[in-house]
Length: 246
Image (cartoon, rainbow, N blue to C red; front, side, top):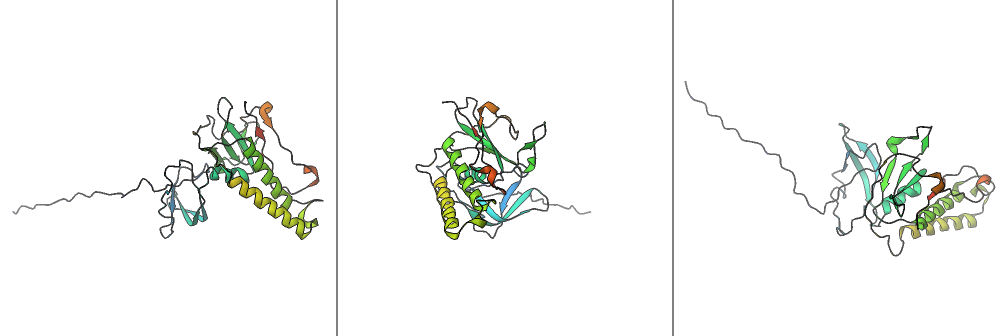
């Protein structure tokens, strides 16, 4: 009987190399924020390097095609574009295009700390209409009342281009429509290229995340668009402004 000697070679799974300058992406919406985000391997943005690591504000990546892996744990992005490195850009774009927004403040109500964006709430339980698609923003730059006013002004300018009624674009000449388009373009550029840029600030996380109707009605100032009753098919409601101390 002969002896049999077996040699076992251990297998070690290696990861890396990793760079501290490599950018990691994640989803903002509630339903996908815990999933891993991967950019397709053939994309130029598959490996994104932070060329300004001394800046701590968030960056933004948009995709033309989004799919989910077979296991459901990974979001795969295709046709991606890295947006310009503008402080506060992810929050600005979200606040600009969200249907409904509720501002968050710090405990002393001295500054805006974030915003809940989505379709609002319904019923006495104040649950969100589509909570899985809501976005809870935590600002990493300082926004003030003037910023919210500018966002509302741009939303109102877009409404003038798409609304119906006596002042709708169907009843306007090409010169007037061109003027309205130019107004929207100018407001958008001013909003994104504020000078000096918005200052970075410490992130203050709201205690009751993803909960609507957390603002005292006495501290909420509703904004009404002039001539609102004369138009139909309005695309954007104007965001109410939460009053701050001081």
